[in-house]
Image (cartoon, rainbow over the protein chains, first blue to last red):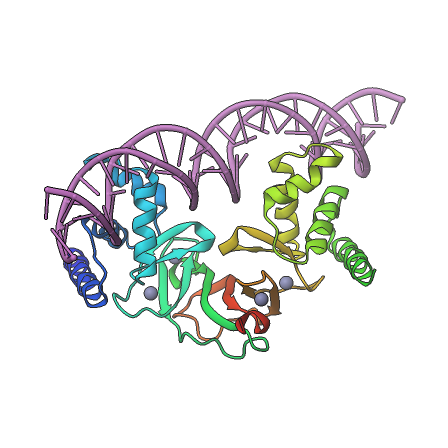
Length: 143
Length: 143
DNA sequence: TTTAGTAATGTTATAATGTTGCATTCGCTA
DNA sequence: TAGCGAATGCAACATTATAACATTACTAAA
Ligand SMILES: [Zn+2]
Ligand SMILES: [Zn+2]
Ligand SMILES: [Zn+2]
Ligand SMILES: [Zn+2]
């Protein structure tokens, strides 16, 4: 229940973010975001697809388009080394994330980074950064 | 010629590294590494495959196995967000790389990072990190 | 020298991930 | 109401990666 509450509030927040920016969180996009929020962990595109099937057989482009929208809007992130997607813990103004991914239990901790990496090679201008740390969380490290 | 010299010396260095560690840089692995060094930029697995075809039709597992070996040995890196592979600029003891990838010209600058990221979330133990910065190099930024 | 064991590669097929191109729908506006 | 643009449906396809099993090559006992 607590979980549902946070998911609902995250969805409400996402609506607001989109409205403010002139984007539209359509039913399909909202549904995909809800699936990501419910999972609370990275999900593969084709797993999302399976979850969408029951209520109308969705095709790959459907889910990939929703994911493109969500990631572009900063509402979700792609975990590059896993080919998976997760809801952004922050509903708004996510300027770049640093992910700590536990290979024991699959839990992901997201930290928000300053968009400016310190000391770039001479003159390189960074648009976006992929920062993913793989290892073991405190609990899994004990085993 | 200068380029060939550096490639040859990199291959020689790679041999040494493998020998010292009890690994064997077989002809196939060496050939794939040579292709990566020659390209001097990230290369896709199936492009490597095409390059290998002429002298005997190689199949996907062949090149993926070689890439697995090279990346495990620290002689190459996978660029996760591009699904591509590149030779490590360092022939030895590469404890983790930070990549600056220009989306204008495709050039990649590799910086070697200290294996320990500062201030991890409580108790998280990092095994390996994926750090890729996308943007424009000094030259391409001017356009 | 045979025999067994291991690492590497070959071979075939298939799985997993992602995209293109075009048709359709829907809400808005001239 | 006719036209426009954004979003989705849909079919086919392209790309990336792996599974499973056979074969080879080299080594190390027996
Ligand atoms: Zn975020
Ligand atoms: Zn864990
Ligand atoms: Zn390196
Ligand atoms: Zn450039």
